[in-house]
Image (cartoon, rainbow, N blue to C red; front, side):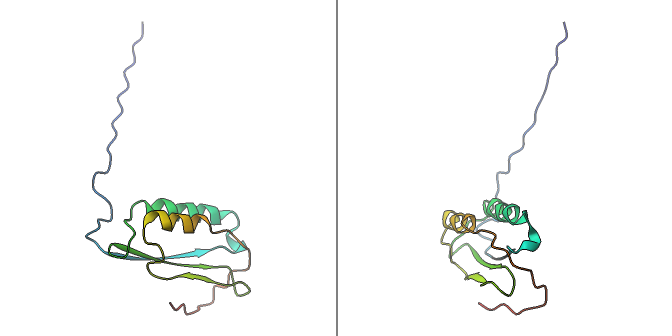
Length: 112
Protein backbone atom coordinates (compact mmCIF):
# COMPACT_ATOMS: atom_id res chain seq x y z
CA UNK A 1 0.00 0.00 0.00
CA UNK A 2 0.80 3.63 -0.23
CA UNK A 3 1.55 5.56 2.96
CA UNK A 4 1.49 9.35 3.02
CA UNK A 5 2.89 11.37 5.88
CA UNK A 6 1.92 15.00 6.29
CA UNK A 7 3.74 17.28 8.67
CA UNK A 8 2.27 20.63 9.57
CA UNK A 9 4.33 23.21 11.37
CA UNK A 10 2.41 26.01 13.03
CA UNK A 11 4.24 28.87 14.68
CA UNK A 12 2.17 31.02 16.98
CA UNK A 13 3.02 34.57 17.90
CA UNK A 14 3.91 34.52 21.60
CA UNK A 15 4.81 38.16 21.95
CA UNK A 16 2.34 40.87 20.98
CA UNK A 17 3.04 42.92 17.89
CA UNK A 18 2.38 46.13 19.84
CA UNK A 19 3.43 45.51 23.46
CA UNK A 20 1.72 47.51 26.19
CA UNK A 21 5.07 49.07 27.07
CA UNK A 22 5.00 50.70 23.62
CA UNK A 23 2.34 53.34 24.17
CA UNK A 24 0.51 54.05 20.92
CA UNK A 25 -1.91 56.70 19.76
CA UNK A 26 -3.84 55.21 16.84
CA UNK A 27 -6.03 57.41 14.63
CA UNK A 28 -8.44 55.52 12.37
CA UNK A 29 -10.15 57.27 9.45
CA UNK A 30 -13.01 55.38 7.79
CA UNK A 31 -14.76 56.43 4.57
CA UNK A 32 -18.34 55.19 4.52
CA UNK A 33 -19.47 57.02 1.40
CA UNK A 34 -20.74 55.46 -1.82
CA UNK A 35 -17.26 55.70 -3.33
CA UNK A 36 -16.15 52.63 -1.37
CA UNK A 37 -19.22 50.60 -2.43
CA UNK A 38 -19.18 47.29 -0.54
CA UNK A 39 -15.71 48.03 0.74
CA UNK A 40 -16.91 49.72 3.90
CA UNK A 41 -17.79 46.43 5.59
CA UNK A 42 -14.37 45.02 4.66
CA UNK A 43 -12.66 48.16 5.99
CA UNK A 44 -14.67 48.02 9.20
CA UNK A 45 -13.88 44.32 9.68
CA UNK A 46 -10.18 45.00 9.02
CA UNK A 47 -10.15 47.64 11.76
CA UNK A 48 -11.79 45.19 14.19
CA UNK A 49 -9.26 42.47 13.31
CA UNK A 50 -6.27 44.80 13.71
CA UNK A 51 -7.59 45.91 17.10
CA UNK A 52 -6.93 42.36 18.35
CA UNK A 53 -3.23 43.28 18.23
CA UNK A 54 -3.78 46.28 20.51
CA UNK A 55 -4.41 46.57 24.22
CA UNK A 56 -6.85 49.47 24.09
CA UNK A 57 -7.11 51.56 27.22
CA UNK A 58 -6.36 55.01 28.66
CA UNK A 59 -2.94 53.92 29.98
CA UNK A 60 -1.96 51.63 27.08
CA UNK A 61 -2.98 52.02 23.42
CA UNK A 62 -5.21 55.05 22.88
CA UNK A 63 -7.54 55.11 19.88
CA UNK A 64 -9.45 57.90 18.12
CA UNK A 65 -11.59 57.56 15.01
CA UNK A 66 -13.05 59.79 12.29
CA UNK A 67 -15.86 58.41 10.14
CA UNK A 68 -16.96 60.51 7.17
CA UNK A 69 -19.33 60.31 4.20
CA UNK A 70 -18.91 63.54 2.26
CA UNK A 71 -20.01 67.13 2.77
CA UNK A 72 -23.75 66.44 2.96
CA UNK A 73 -23.43 64.05 5.88
CA UNK A 74 -22.39 64.55 9.46
CA UNK A 75 -18.85 63.47 10.23
CA UNK A 76 -18.51 61.38 13.37
CA UNK A 77 -15.50 62.04 15.55
CA UNK A 78 -14.63 59.62 18.32
CA UNK A 79 -12.13 61.37 20.57
CA UNK A 80 -9.07 59.83 22.21
CA UNK A 81 -10.03 57.19 24.74
CA UNK A 82 -13.65 56.89 23.55
CA UNK A 83 -13.13 53.17 24.07
CA UNK A 84 -11.84 52.12 27.46
CA UNK A 85 -11.03 48.57 26.29
CA UNK A 86 -10.97 46.32 23.21
CA UNK A 87 -14.52 45.07 23.70
CA UNK A 88 -15.97 48.59 23.81
CA UNK A 89 -13.92 49.56 20.74
CA UNK A 90 -15.15 46.57 18.71
CA UNK A 91 -18.76 47.18 19.71
CA UNK A 92 -18.55 50.80 18.52
CA UNK A 93 -16.84 49.93 15.22
CA UNK A 94 -19.20 47.05 14.41
CA UNK A 95 -22.20 49.35 14.95
CA UNK A 96 -21.03 51.67 12.13
CA UNK A 97 -22.95 51.43 8.85
CA UNK A 98 -22.29 52.76 5.36
CA UNK A 99 -24.64 55.69 4.78
CA UNK A 100 -23.76 56.94 1.30
CA UNK A 101 -22.62 60.32 0.13
CA UNK A 102 -19.85 61.39 -2.18
CA UNK A 103 -16.31 61.50 -0.91
CA UNK A 104 -14.83 64.96 -1.09
CA UNK A 105 -11.08 64.46 -1.39
CA UNK A 106 -10.33 68.17 -1.07
CA UNK A 107 -8.16 68.78 1.98
CA UNK A 108 -10.17 69.56 5.06
CA UNK A 109 -8.72 70.25 8.46
CA UNK A 110 -9.95 67.82 11.11
CA UNK A 111 -9.94 68.98 14.70
CA UNK A 112 -10.55 67.09 17.91
